[in-house]
Length: 278
Image 1 (spheres, rainbow, N blue to C red):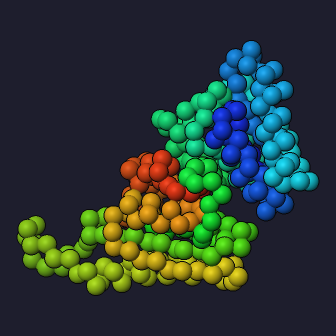
Image 2: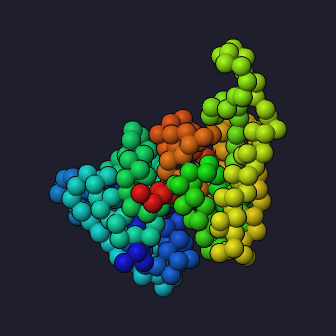
């Protein structure tokens, strides 16, 4: 049953901040909250259960009174535990930095692997506390990006927030068909044609989901710029950035390359990663 929001907790300030966000997300969805801790040494178990997890649960109650809350304490590696728990969750929430059972969560490939191989959307809590502004959707035209669009519209409706659907393009982000003499040095880019194509991609992505959420105000934003820099700038005025787990075109290698790493490390607000249907 996908009526649970899970949050990974290790006692770090970042993970406790994630509890606050997860409690709000669970309340918005009418879901229950499950606080998850992974441990590798039994000697760490009692202090965690009677200390950190109790404080985390109290924070969740304070943030969302009346919320149904459960705990899961599991022996195993962080990624394995979270992947397993995410099978039964509508959303998985983790902090941007951790220690103990979730040590170094954003160091190395843990979050990337969870985003790529977990189940359901992943929300990484980072950036400024209690951010305000629109939900920012990174549009790329991929199947995962389409799933991200659906999630972003739903988040806008849940939060009562407007949606900024942003597509960034540039002349080096993907091969551009050239219709002319077969001379590799004779490269001509039709900027107007390219811009129109990206504008259609943006409009078509939004059109597929707008009717299902008519109450969400949408701004279409098409920018010719470096993808990473444009998204990071926009995230400083957003309350949430939503992206697909894999992209193409201007978002080549999403969550495997520099754009994804920049979002996870430097976005000015939480980042939600949504996997497409396989």
